[in-house]
Image 1 (cartoon, one colour):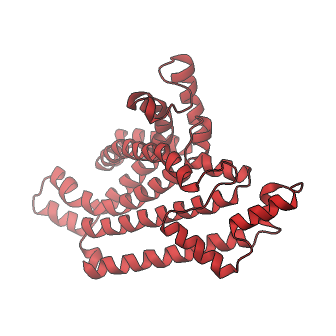
Image 2 (image 1 turned 90 degrees about the vertical axis):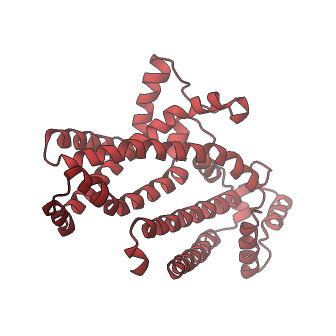
Image 3 (image 1 turned 90 degrees about the horizontal axis):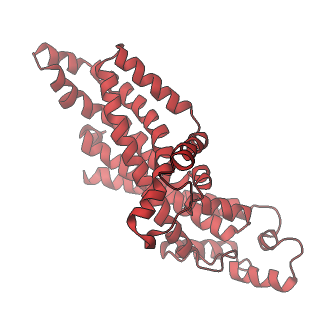
Length: 314
């Protein structure tokens, strides 16, 4: 287990190093002067000089890269030109919205998808399987933003049960804040649940077709025991992979849904930073999101060893 963990950590660190080089290089090869790109063509020479000094553009390339990476390690991400506050403060503020939203969406998605996938696989070819997978296919086909608009019209405009958008902040109380996240959670969770349910069904059907399952049935093991004790655990590896990818998507890729509901999350921060040409924010936040994806993938790899001990040897 120690060697397995060491290999996975080494791969994660090398991937993180390569990702930092790519993110830094992409912004370095942008045509033109980054300071002028941020301030516009009509900026004064004094303002350009001040911003170039703030961004360290006068220093050698290697010095800037090392300063940037050391800042990332100490969570000193620089200062946003647009907001005139440290980028780390912006990230923590927006993460207080995006992280609970991602966790709630993934939890709801899992609670719906796993039972539906098991139900469909255990009734392969029957009416229940056809209906559940038909609904899952509809969920896969519906775009998130369109589904979000339907939820706003139904529950916020027509029924008026929840607010249509905005976020009051956790200082207003847990219930008002959670109430503002109900519709975004549904808009994100249900389409993801449709994908996860189909993956669960496919993985479980594949496990049920294996020789060891036929051997267990030949020995007289009950159908429910075969399903829950033997097949389900072996089917969880692809399911865990998809769950890891979904959490990374929910944390970093919710730009459209956050804009529909006007939520001050990380996705909206990246969108605003790009439109406002705040390259310091873009560079730092993108790298943090890349690091979070690498960390999530590492945790998924470690879960493989817990689910199936054979993975440690492989």
